[in-house]
Length: 182
Image: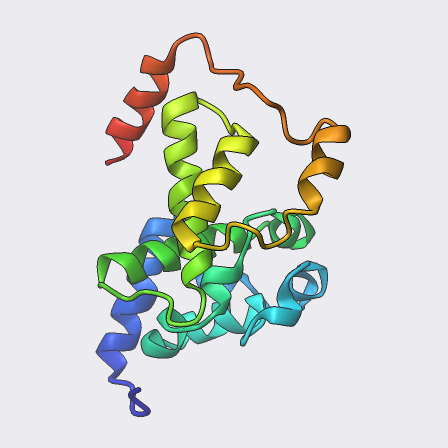
């Protein structure tokens, strides 16, 4: 990891993030409300507000190799709590995208990345989430077939895991959204 940051590299990284985010990093004044509200910050190596400041400072390697960007579950609690309306969850998406485009994979959070891939494939094929299929494919890919299997009966009983998919009527619209995005 680099410790000396070239000023031009710092600016380039910050500009790249801001252009994809369509927001200014300086908008964040480090109040910490995003980090205080984050339900998974206890697992992160840096809090969301630290990631924002590190991005602004151009600490590219540390940010793109952090656990934080992969652990964000995009629940938007952080963005909702931000008094300045900064898209905290959005920056995590942007940073993951930049990391993937640069060939940087999560070294410690491979299963999180796998979940994101399975999730998107599930939406592509069904137009919405079909939880049972999502869980099944995720378990097959991670080879954790029996981990937390005791939860399934409780989830089925509560109606959280349906036995059939409710596909959208026009799956071609979903395919078009994914094609337009690519």
